[in-house]
Length: 116
Image: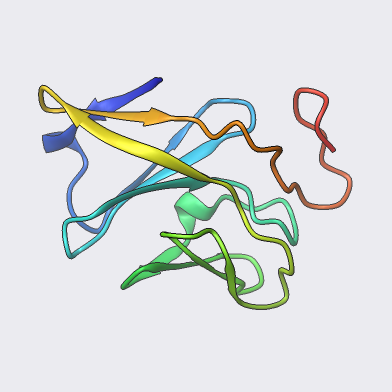
């Protein structure tokens, strides 16, 4: 499990990037839900934590691909591959992420910890 931060330090509408390998983005939506997905867009190397969240989607700041925060699926191109989804738990007021065991989908040319 990765410790993210105290819940009261991640305001609704904010996102935080974890320096895991590959990086993980944790989102606290305006509706109060918490989600964690791989931070890197599968189309090109861009941080999804820097993207725009609307409802249950995040839009990549580079080329406007959209990803579903619940499922990781691509809701708008140019991305074609989904991002991994990770489990988020709040324990004693602290946000924790349990990283998925699935292999990540990374953009072309990016290698992280032996993944390509």
